[in-house]
Length: 343
View 1 (tube, rainbow, N blue to C red):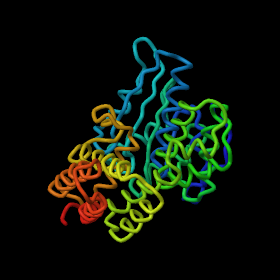
View 2: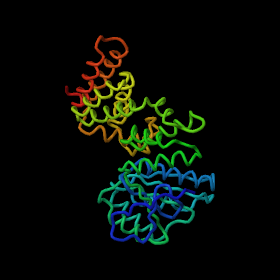
View 3: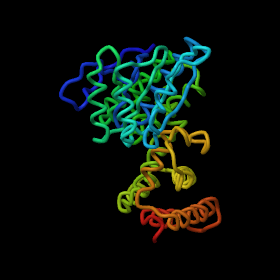
View 4: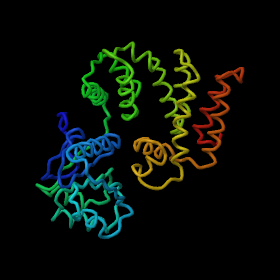
């Protein structure tokens, strides 16, 4: 079902009796633990598994459970044989925040998993549920683990982008890959989206010139780097990045657009409860985008978010001709956002 990749990084446990595989080596098993902090790769793996199972049998019944709001007996009820015997995929989110009832039921389930049922447990990291994790990792012949560790090194990101193009049989120049990784190094989901966009729009080999035409050389990088630094409260870094971007010829309009995309996502997610998978359809966002927006919201409150949105609207107008000094407007926007709306 998947092409081979570099061996998965070993999970942080003394011993594991079950196979530990990379995200793109996922395959059916009675119980699948998807562990690690890289949300995008975890979601990609789970989606790949669902598509494979649905290809094997279109009648596949897919059910989602949130482990942090779990009720005793729910897993056994959902896994019990149905009247028509359809195969089942049960996706369990937030296992890192699971209830005690879920731990008890999941460990019991390992001893007698249901036939024609695949249970996927998504654990994003942390010590919660360690007893369950140990039980899964000892369940030889029943479970496998898909390790989705964060891609931190440039070479890992380069290999990921290479695999994105190779999976579609597309040729890409090494310089184009380096430019893409440089431009989208902060977010593997955005890197994947950029690769997919190029493959969708461009025929033939993708060159460095192609990347420059679509993403303005390093302009797109600068835009999101500045936005990420400001949202994280790093005012000095954001201002330095802004001035570097402008001095290299960046247009202020896409710079403001990068801020707007980030802040809009934060505003959508603010106050919403539920897992990213549950909210994706409601908010019109990918689960990884919801997780990223939630991380970005740290330290923000509703009033600050409202002031940032107002500042964005004013800056957008300024850089489109409403102001004689659009650069000052951009610097003011950076200050407002870096102070989380308190400037």
